Length: 390
Length: 149
Ligand SMILES: [Zn+2]
Image 1 (cartoon, each protein chain N blue to C red):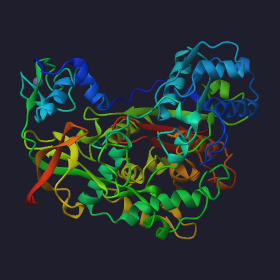
Image 2 (cartoon, rainbow over the protein chains, first blue to last red):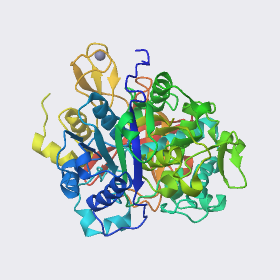
Image 3 (cartoon, each protein chain N blue to C red):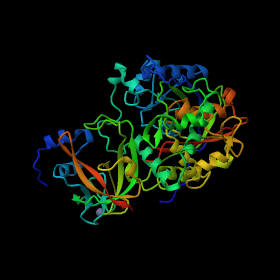
């Protein structure tokens, strides 16, 4: 089927604000619900909203909409949902519900959390051990889930003869940017030597190729653009939002790095949005694994197949030790999943909103008006979001 | 298809691999040292993992069908850490390969590689199917044949 440009929701729905608890790479003594409640109450205060102004709730299944409503004392909801991450899915569902008139103002949240599956130290926390398992265990003979990215990183290196240092540029960019983000979990400077000598986890990817498991929460308000104009911060309009998936979506059956969910997102987002990569002021490619960022840069059209590493080297800001595309466009200025913390896209979207609202502090990109978030990975969770302000 | 093992025993043997009714025949095949991949009776297309319908023609006439297990390594990783599994300690990184099977372009099966030092295993190499026992359960694996393809 041909890619549709139909997009009746375009600019009708907006983010009114975003807030975060900040992320920690250590086990907190907090539940996911406690972190979500902190981020949400902080945001509602900042936006001057009362509990009764909210009539929709949307977040991941780790904190149910009902538990959050009950905790925040939100009197009545006409819509709620707990769809799967990554986080553009929450955004699309909430925006669609607003646009359809099922509700007017949605409190959207995410809770990155150090689940027992992720790290040995998380596994030592008895409260985390009794949480429902989020991944199957006991079978090493698989390319399931996160392992699939390692598999395709190995294929990428094989096909394009890319030196591992090129992957390191993605990690170093995030770490350099995180130094300006007090809410980031990992802020110590990282050198290429640090990267190259990091502990190998699943060859060819090492610890610093993988996002940092964190405790924290982000909160967002999604409402009509009209309603957002009456709130304190400038509305960040959703110009286009899509998900992307192809039929060969099982990790080890993916056709190639030239045919997966990213390509569906790139086509559909381009067809539905009013601006493209040359028009944006800051870019947010997903970076749960370094290979995903390299492949996004190629798949969204910044460079050709296998060229992302060379593209980063050619667009490197040596002074700040970070990426600056065409000397102008920073990439993941908050530090991304690799250094701010693994947030399944919510950190990228929160920073995108803060940048467009002029609220990014020392990280502020001058006159940022347009941005794109290309979230998720190759197999069953690619996503895209084009955001802008007046 | 009749099986010599009860559903209950089959499920408990392969519960950790996520067995369900659609993949039961594949796992039952393992007990006989047979690598069975779903194949469509209408259009002859293979698919994996096992689905209840042929993705190509929507025929429900799909049957777990023996393949040779010969092919070429397409994807390859070495686990320096990983899930607990009998006989796997990761002190020697554990190879996992997705092999493009000769039976059909793009059809892959994922298993470990046995019988060669890690330095000799690489993408592009030809392999053949072999089996080993993990906690008494026959487990498919690949073994290098000849030189690189
Ligand atoms: Zn068929």
